[in-house]
Length: 448
Image (cartoon, rainbow, N blue to C red; front, side, top):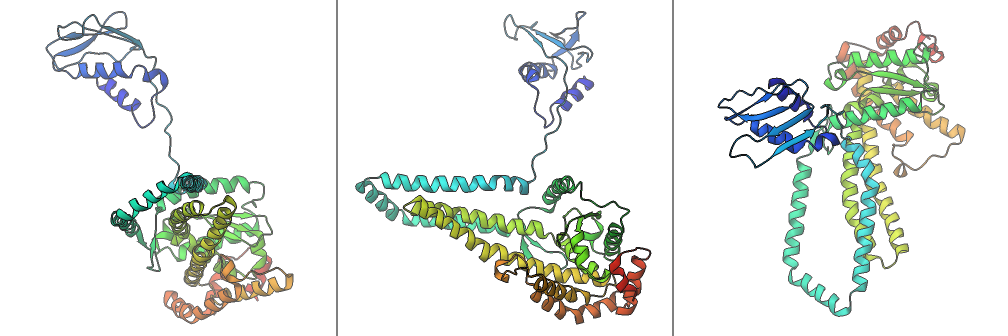
């Protein structure tokens, strides 16, 4: 009986029952009730079938072996009349566990559907109102006026509930202590980061540099050096950092929340020494440490939910679909320029500051940070690349990043000396040790 109970528990976990077992489920439940009754036990017959009969004992005698055919026969006066229940259940087996999508990914999938529902709802309200006769419209207005306090109270109650939900999802940002809204937990985003990293590995499969390439080696050493020097931060020491260098002219680099570092060779061509590379990697690691992706998605989620109300109202009020489409476009742009992009620039500025602190603890020359962004500004001017106004961009302008970083240098120089008694000269010696033996052209400036 013990083995039977273990087997039934194993088959009734979160995975759904197969179709041939679902047909046997009522019989299984009935037999289970009989087996637990104080007046019954089961014995196996010679034809591999099990019959239930009355015995005054608690001990069931049902054998586990070869029970593919199970017959339950009524032998006592209080069981149902003339009932022999015979079912052929086959062999029990467990199905593979089904894992739910991470909430952030589920939200991304359902986001277009939410907008579609809001558009259909708003348009339906408009059509319904247009089809009402004048007397019915008058009655609706009178009803709304008579129940205005009830409607106001309901709206106020909804606002209070929404405020409580937001207050219960407030979180303190590590290192900065800033209070922020987090709808999605770090665990949820770790699941999404694992899926995202797999997608990137498939996308860049033919472009990844081998681990023996000198560019991969230098990035790997700098990342591990940053992690080692900042291991007192739990968000750094708890992550297994790994490096992937992509052969691409894009001047870009990013780090996923699970510690996967993706560096493009275009960014390696843009930096002039290992100090600038350390500042760039510190900036990207700061995004992962601070959980900026989860924070930005949380704000976007709340803003999108509020925008659905406005979107429904636009499609309900505008008399024609063309005007509703124009209003929807205007609402989308206002949301981007008033909420999403300013908040993104704020997070970038915070990552610049924390990234410089990480680089300072790694003994890099933090003065390389503002110099790098001045170089990027000059590079854009020489190449003739168009530069968008800052209010249209998700990142601060190169000039503003240079100004902000330059203002942090005196404070960071003092912190760098407090961390390990390092000066700019001794810090360069430390960085030379990190990349010693690597033949990479930008390192020639470090040796000079």
